[in-house]
Length: 191
Ligand SMILES: [Zn+2]
Image 1 (cartoon, rainbow, N blue to C red):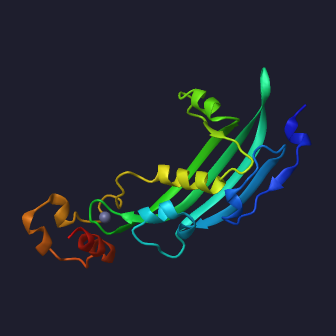
Image 2 (tube, protein in one colour):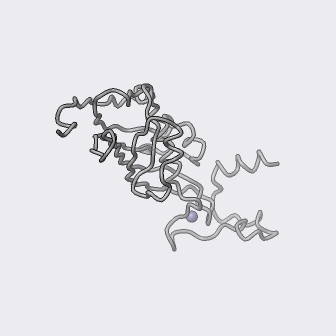
Image 3 (tube, rainbow, N blue to C red):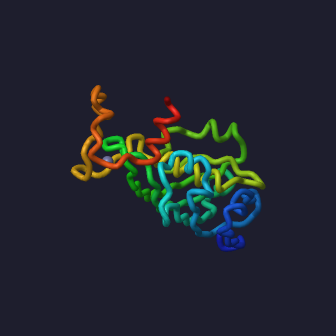
């Protein structure tokens, strides 16, 4: 018997706070979508160089149960993330829009031990430890952070290297562009 046909499917609230406590131990599946602004994601907000109207992430999520030979059906969570944030371009040191478009698949396991034992070589899906008060908001935020490029840059040809990127001694004197206020702030903190 296909378990998905007998289990109720619950619509997730798009409220960020409601996402902090989702019961993944209940015999039901979930479906939902919403938008999270940068201010809903404090760890992402720390990375953002500036926040422009429209920055944030659309999420779309669904869970279902999959039969697993010889054991209980496994609960699968599929998450789509699409959105944008601004980071400091590592070439010109100005704000740079970074678009993310990610698809993730997870398998819900019952304990930390089971998650630790989960084969690392499974690139298709990662384990998440299910709980009655699962913090889905944190998981979404983790995935955004994991998707951020290590060295964000404008596309090739879009910008010129900032003098200080070369580490030149006269770097401070080159001022052909208005300095990004966030960089000024950072420099003030350093001094
Ligand atoms: Zn740039």
